[in-house]
Length: 208
Ligand SMILES: Nc1ncnc2c1ncn2[C@@H]1O[C@H](COP(=O)(O)OP(=O)(O)OP(=O)(O)O)[C@@H](O)[C@H]1O
Image 1 (cartoon, rainbow, N blue to C red):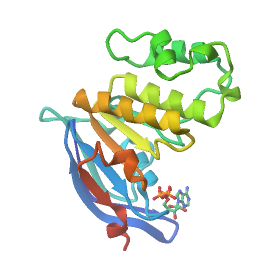
Image 2: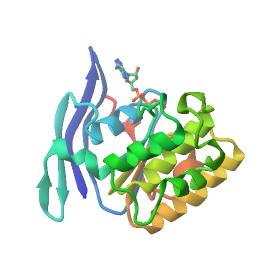
Image 3: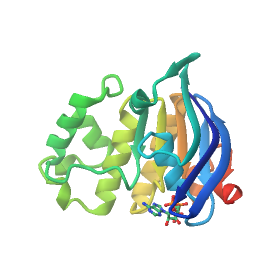
Image 4: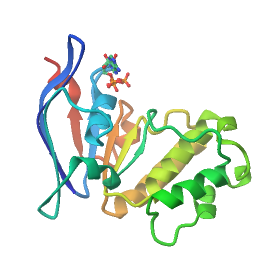
């Protein structure tokens, strides 16, 4: 899928966060959204995935030359962001069973394998609300990596991860890149994106 963004702007009350943002995101490429705290990286991710509306401008989603309705574009994305809520009242296995009912998962991947990949196999029957923040982050990332999607959107992906978790992220991202999907990573930590995102977009440049 290609995402074309024209004259995009977001304003909260009287403050423009960014304005006149024009860009085309191509299939199979890696993009980093950088910029100072508050420059709008997370906000732009939420707008690209259709979770929030822009204040002005236009986003066009196209797949193999065909326009995709904005309302249907969400199925082309997986996200691991702070605004993506896990279902706290489910155990891990219940959460995965629920997720598998609603989204297409990468071929041949089972709930058990997601647990193993996310280093959570000992927590199958633990309630998600009792997970540590690092465990929640690994679960979010594993769901984003192993659910079928054209675009993976990540917001500060290694926040809450320890050294082992950060190494795990690096290894999983290498596999993601090899599958020819697009990734867009909002981050100010070069180690989270440098190896995977040849294209860097600084939102600081779009502050009016
Ligand atoms: N719902 C909201 N209402 C008002 N202002 C908001 C809202 N959401 C975000 N903002 C403001 O928009 C600006 C951009 O926030 P955003 O979280 O997108 O920045 P960021 O670049 O991701 O920051 P950080 O690097 O700190 O994560 C900030 O000034 C923030 O206070």
